[in-house]
Length: 302
Length: 302
Image (cartoon, rainbow over all chains, first blue to last red):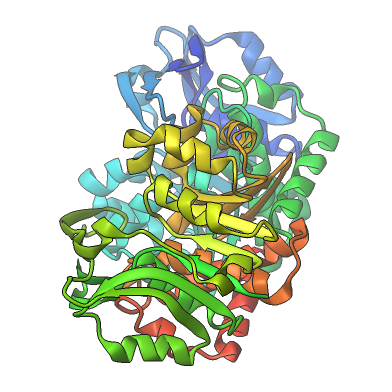
């Protein structure tokens, strides 16, 4: 089934204790699309870039089954740029630069074909833009997932609550779940957030795994302990892309299949962090992915 | 099989966002012994208290199958006292008071019967005292586990490394594993720490679960997301007590059984935090414990 991915496409400069990657391709929509492309070749991308964005990168995404008709290229504009530096512990980072550039004028107008995509992954953007995308859909969607962050809870909570009414899955981290709900217990937080709209809440905890909440059911997907974490950038988006790509390919939105999708998302994220930026996501095989999913199975089996 | 538990028996005053418990019974050895007592009634306790320690509490432990011959009661001394206050997030706490009192003179001399206990759980104490206990054992032990903390890594690292050569399992938290090994990756940390002596490393991550490392194998036990965490005090000791109690009762030190023991330990810890201090650990049934272990199974099943 078709998957619509919406979000940022960017240049990133990333510093970690293990090195530096300058002006590499990044952005939530990029990670989502690469991760999803291992599961489905029916992806529609909506994003904005400047004339400085390499045509070869656009062609590469096309070759992976990503429809780029929804990529707005502002020839005389510059692509969104983000620079960050990770602390020694890799769990925290400082943002050094955020140049919105053309992203400031992102006004997604979905091509006709996009409006009937059955699965939708809305990457982290202003809630107003996320709502604008949803409002263009034809209503035939099977599952709409939305990612957001504490920044929007701070400055655009009302808009965020509006868009939450319209989505099926919300993906946020544990601190964001606590902020959004006002509850410390994640079980209580999940109850409160489900009342806001999403039937499913996915809480991403980075190196501590991910939780899926649905009614009174809880599923926990561990993170795989890795010998080397090189660059955590994009891990959350890769997780979401793997999850939604798997769901679109299996076209099964049962709770049991959602659990599996979270394991596939976690597996994709575990590859992502092993190399800088999207490097590793460009060269995986389904065999490698299946082998890693088996490792997740072994990790918790008793 | 018999289980020797060594550590503090204390009075605690605990403040959490959910209330305050004053001068309640605490101490690592207490939590370990209560948790283990659900699995075996052949427990030997070694600790020290003052004349102010309630005789009824000693009798209660005896009634649960805990041999108290190794409890030194200093009639004219005061029991070790600890007071702490948890932050709103419950993951951090400030120590308000630490009165060592009689603990300052703890010089454990094991009763003859204790020396042949097949399973040994050394609660957090100075590494020198932990070594003194091991040196009195008769060498017939099947499994010796040791708990420690960053404080001893800071001020008594050489003594700690000496005692690590003599134990089979080390239980510490993730930051302590990183400090002890000098490695950020827990996989690398586990390799380094296994070279120091312990064949098994258990990394306790509180609300994020626990990891078991053995050679190149990794097992992950999640923590059960709870509606209400009232008081995290003693959760790590309860985990260790449940783990070692289960191992002593099954008398099986295979890797497969160690995995199960970690789930039982996690289940016991999940009960511990639901009420203040040892309250909940006093009144559980095996049915409740088995039901909770099943919840851990369901939590990760896909």
